[in-house]
Amino acid sequence: MKKHHCAHRNENLTPSGKQRRKLLHLATLGAGVSLFTVPTGVRQAHASGKAKTLLLSCMDYRLMDEIERYMLRKGLYHNYDHIVLAGASLGAITEKYPAWTRTFWDHLDLSVTLHDIHTVIVMDHRDCGAYKMLLGEDYSSDVEKETAVHTTNLMHLKKMINEKYPQIEVETLLMDLKGEVEVILDTSIGQEATQPDEIESAY
Ligand SMILES: [Zn+2]
Image 1 (tube, rainbow, N blue to C red):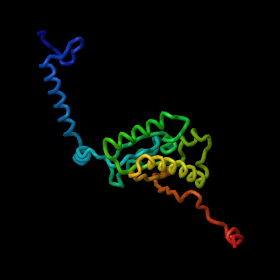
Image 2 (cartoon, rainbow, N blue to C red):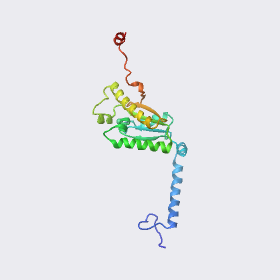
Image 3 (tube, protein in one colour):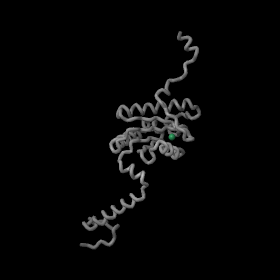
Image 4 (spheres, rainbow, N blue to C red):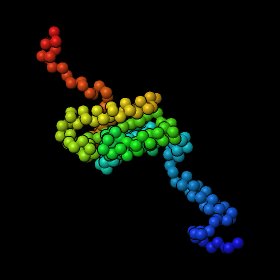
């Protein structure tokens, strides 16, 4: 048998049994080393194999730290699956980029299969460049209008998720650029105060 001098030079060679054992040994060592470098809490979360929560957020670099802090406050630090799509809810349902929609559903299905998640958090944010790009309008100058357009898309996606997975709880959120998070509810739509003169005319 040809003597093997270098572990990295295996081109044109089928690994012998000895080589395979050596590679396996190295792989085992590698796994052992990485285990010792992972913090205990994270290791326990990974060992459970259940992330429980899937987060969908926008790609916007300005809010990555704020999003992580929010998840930390919810007690989910390093314990959630994360899909990043520009526009978050809008990115998942836009007809302009069907591949994004496909990506969202493929990953949601995987998260359900692999980690048995029971919650999806959809985190939109204000002043979203993807909203401007995909909808062709800048909503950020009008807070109410901006809230309304995010509400429409968040509720649309929530409904679609629950049609496929009725058992999953969907939290719909809107973050501002300071990292403050507003819970968006179905009732946010069509809840404009009735004008007094309309009440009078109704009688
Ligand atoms: Zn965005």
